[in-house]
Image (cartoon, rainbow, N blue to C red; front, side, top):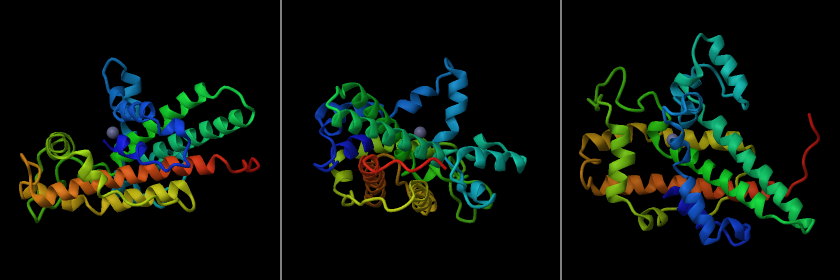
Length: 267
Ligand SMILES: [Zn+2]
């Protein structure tokens, strides 16, 4: 739903090949693509990519400011005697896939300017945009940003659930049964250009999502994700879907704008 909302709300000055009905369908199809990489039939892939869906910000922040580059973070994690797959790699994966999209769009511009065939690069860009959407969608779900990702851990004075159902209960059956495109679309924000560094912007997005972790547990405790839930839980969930869709739309658009800028000199 997030991918479809984002692709279908790109502005008119984004390339038409990203906004056509076929493009919206393809980007929508690719939304769950990284979850198709969890099969035990592909064990190496499943292990390598699973940490790219989340980041436990409490654990990551305990190691200091987040470095921009994946290996710098992983080196720090190993130096602390920990493992990256226990902490998560969400912002690095999202940044890298966004940069793949930007690279493809730069190639699209080059081929267009040279009056060459662009169909192949259009296919590549659609794949990157759809792939990116998975992580941006995950990043709108508070439980993808926390050690409390599936049941409260540690001191629990408010008696939040410690069972391992809340994560899927919220993002799976509850959304499927109660949330539809119009409710989420109605809460999308206007197109907002991304100013400044993409990694920092994306981390800020995750940190905003993270402010809702306890809210998810409060709603769950009040029966908000059972059956039809409550007016508050439906409103909250629509707002989270809208946040993901708005961020994805802004990131795809920004990749397009940035792809038109001169490439800096190699450092
Ligand atoms: Zn995921």
